[in-house]
Image 1 (cartoon, rainbow, N blue to C red):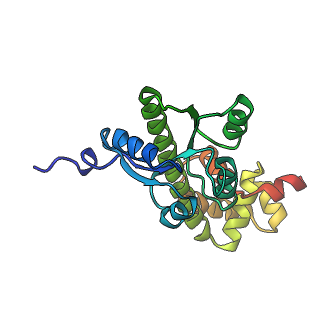
Image 2 (cartoon, rainbow, N blue to C red):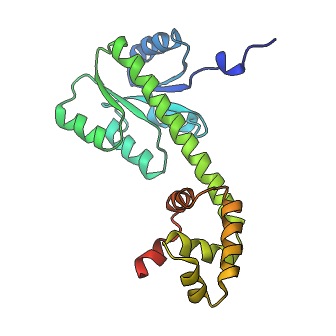
Length: 217
């Protein structure tokens, strides 16, 4: 019997970006010894060409890159919607720089020479964050598909339900009978794949449904 595929699959992709080739080589050797899939680069532009958004990945990034400093690259990636977890490396970083990096979404900020005992756990934590984000994106996409399956009337009913209205209030607002609202509400719960009002409200919050209606009340 074959063992589960996940047992031998790499834990994730680690992108290394440092303008010092020897640093990239050393970190690549270190991380591959821990069974990480590592891709090293000394150029920002080459990294951007090779980066694959579908990867479960993190980025180990040198702050002082000649083409584009690490903090500016972080800002550009975020602006482009690329939310890859970043671990910054620096040989001359200061506390304000570290604070700016963390506030902008960096998962860690390590100084050179890199301590393996700190880097390995930092990479594992960053990859776990990447996996969590991938799962959240997939879940949200699934909810969006379910939302798209609702009829216009069911969508209206859902918006009123998550705004906290009772069936009789919804019926009055939509000019229909309470029994019709109950039926539409049951269809909404079924199509959205939820079993409780609380679950429906949480799904609506993730999708931004009902915010306009709530603000008008």
